[in-house]
Image 1 (cartoon, rainbow, N blue to C red):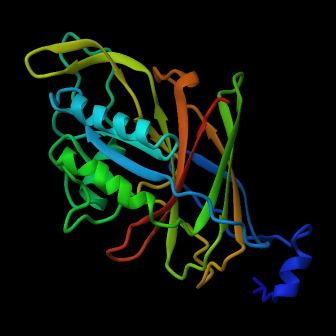
Image 2: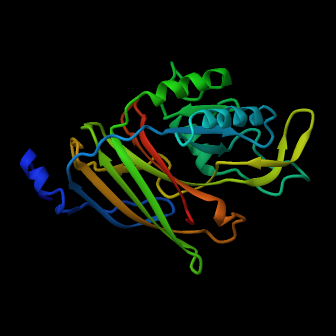
Length: 291
């Protein structure tokens, strides 16, 4: 592969016409990469950071509705800035006998707990942009969540992300386009992750002394299009310079035999560092699977 060295004048020249270079296609869990390109362009202005929140939760966890309420409060305070993924796996997550209609558990959640975050936390707990808070990723004290969110919102994001989807109801296939544009130079190894979540699922939820039969479950992790720990991003480049753009076109076919409501499915994509001791999410984006 040829390396491209561009001066400031060259960057201006490619504002309208940029040469694209093909990079090796990667493999994931459920997503098939149709095309993968990268090029240089005039650097964009940085957009506001959106925070990725991964919430450890469960239908048999009596305190989890309070955790969800705290995140809803934060989302109301900072509208459009929080992206939540509900991780159902491990303790307190099996369906409630005789009451639950659905099973939200996934092996993805268990794998994230055990192989990526160093163990399953007590529930509810949340991790913010995959940053260490002291010595832990997951924070169980809900009283600390809002302060962490406020701190993360003030951290500049070094790239902009764009996400879109077209959905063919006849085939059950979505064509997903993920585009990233670096606004600052990054020399760390990075990966990207794409997941499917579902909102507005009405089902039973333990609330301590009682069970709520018609609780609304949101942000439920359903599927991962990439590997659990992400797929390598531009790993052929030592530095992703400001102005570096990548675009991935991915085909995703809904699995058969699932009780998902396609109208309530969302795609969440995020770019995160992939170095020892550094998993920090740099930017996140969300879109409807079926626009």
